[in-house]
Length: 297
Ligand code: NAD
Image 1 (tube, protein in one colour):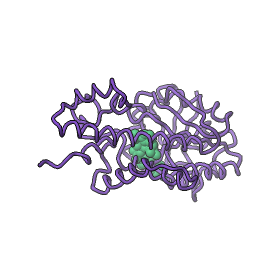
Image 2 (spheres, helix red, strand yellow):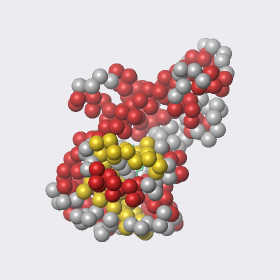
Image 3 (cartoon, protein in one colour):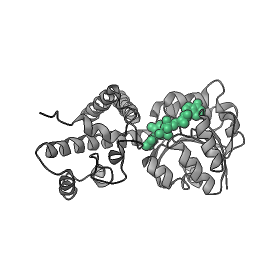
């Protein structure tokens, strides 16, 4: 049983913190949203008045925040955790942010003798609720080993991708590929539908053919083909277009910095950005299916 400080109780962090409580850990939480704090309290978490208070004397601090600026501010900002964490605390950031910021935070904390790993996740809200997330870690091998004591209570797989920032690089590679698969699947389905095919039949054909992929297996973007996926629930919940757009921006930054060629990633970045601009940022990312719907003649 560990003492855990958990900061950021959104769609992902909320259920992750609850799984830690259910596993028997003592979890002190902080979020800017009172509603999120209330929900966590009802599930058995202790509520703190600040990120610092949540983190004090914790064995592990876990952050699950929207983007780079939030993570940097929580760890290295004016009231940053770098001034309160002990040398025995392991800080684990599960947010998806740039590898550059992850390395910057790791270096800033290392100056105070505090250990930090980046551990972004794959598996979405359903995986966060079910405790089946995949953690993709970057940092010292020994720290990743220590982190397993809590990561295993929120997920099924823990990978060590490499040094500090490597978890974030692996995560954006995965999400860039996912965006290409989703956009490609959406347009293939729309093409078939435009020619009178039944979306369910076409999905079954492609699932048994060389176009088979994760979106067809578990996350079909066409409403009504699968039950209990965002497309069949008005594209609500799931993984937001705004967040996918952010991740694809991170992938493009990483590509520019390294000289890697990512023409497909660049295309999906622009597709998702413009879909968000058109007002769909808060819908699930499978809603790109509607973007490629042909105009009725
Ligand atoms: P979210 O917007 O639902 O939650 C973020 C939470 O952080 C909010 O409750 C917000 O109030 C809180 N917050 C912001 N600044 C804070 C601060 N300074 N102190 C305390 N709390 C603060 O986002 P989410 O969907 O939970 O995603 C979190 C991260 O996980 C993102 O980086 C996202 O890209 C990544 N991610 C999301 C999914 C998904 O399916 N939603 C999947 C994998 C990874």
